[in-house]
Amino acid sequence: MKKILFTFLIIYGFGLNAQRSDYDWKKMDPKQRKEVINNLSPEERKELLTRFRNNMVMDNLNVDPKDKDEFTQLYNEYLENQKQIKSQFNSNFNPETLSDEEAKVKLQQSFDVGQKLLDNRKKYADKMQQVIPCQKVLKLFQSEGMMRDKMNERKPHGKPNASKPRQNP
Image (cartoon, rainbow, N blue to C red; front, top):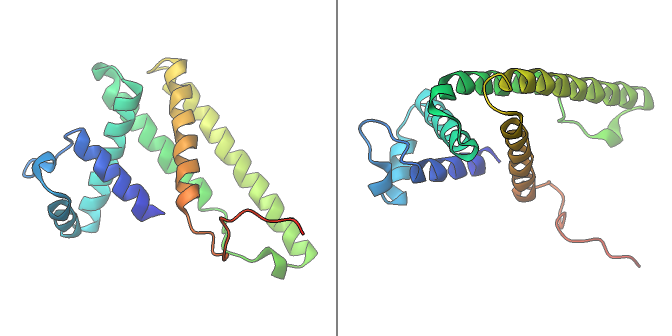
């Protein structure tokens, strides 16, 4: 999933002419881009991905240039907080192997983390509205949901034939 998102953001970033000072991403063919990206350090790749993602969000929301720095900082804080909250829940388990008590605990943990994510979203929605209009905050969250849905469509679910509809006997 991360590779797909990374590739999408890289391609989108090329279209925005988001570039490192020593590369003209628009003039490079895909093979050259891949080679350059593969030669970047993990830190450089992360920075490039963050820059492309931020450019994509700024372009999509049409953020006023005078507000870009402040909004970018808030948006990155929001994403980092969401990531930290999500890390509090380990979803790598098989529910069928849990006892009733373990399943109840895991379910409650999932509710708690979900509430923290919602609370964080509300907190940052308020902060972002100090910088951009409410309509753009709503558009941001809407586009986040669409991106998540698209990523989930492409994400392998680990079950054979998971994408095929079930047939009734």
